[in-house]
Amino acid sequence: MKAGVDFPGVGVGVMVLRSDGKFLLGKRAAASRNEIGSWTFPGGRVELMERLEDACVRETKEEFGIDVKVERLLKLINHFPPKERQHWVNPIFLARLKEGEAKILEPHKFSEIGWFSLQDLPAPLTVNLQELFADIKAGKIKIG
Image 1 (cartoon, one colour):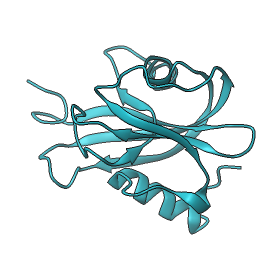
Image 2 (image 1 turned 90 degrees about the vertical axis):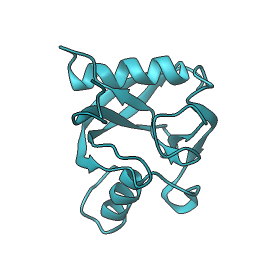
Image 3 (image 1 turned 180 degrees about the vertical axis):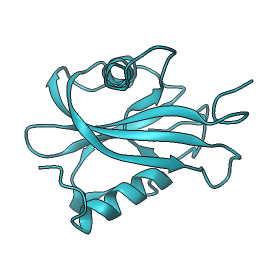
Image 4 (image 1 turned 60 degrees about the vertical axis):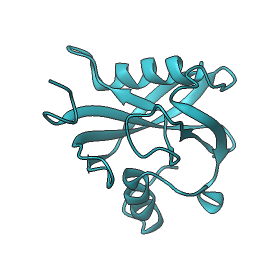
């Protein structure tokens, strides 16, 4: 049985903010679980008995080699990737960069990374990020 395919999986997303207000996004590589070629936050599947916040810290360190301080939950999203028959419950957290220089440590998952502002979002974004950014732009969610 496989999480996200045979039963709903839980995968965190981490909106990592730098001191200049820009946040980290990675472009999904060919071996990604879903939405290949789309831009997304660091994050991934929550392990058994792992706190959501701890998964945020672990995944961000594994994928990009940076340390973060998780601040709060931004939004809980039912993530149904459009081309794949998958179901993920995706809590997205706000975190601040504590230290480190972001680099791709899992090239099978990410082909590019960058720091972006709300005014210069890359395309395409994953469906869950489209939903989150729409709520931020509409003033329903505050990140500052």
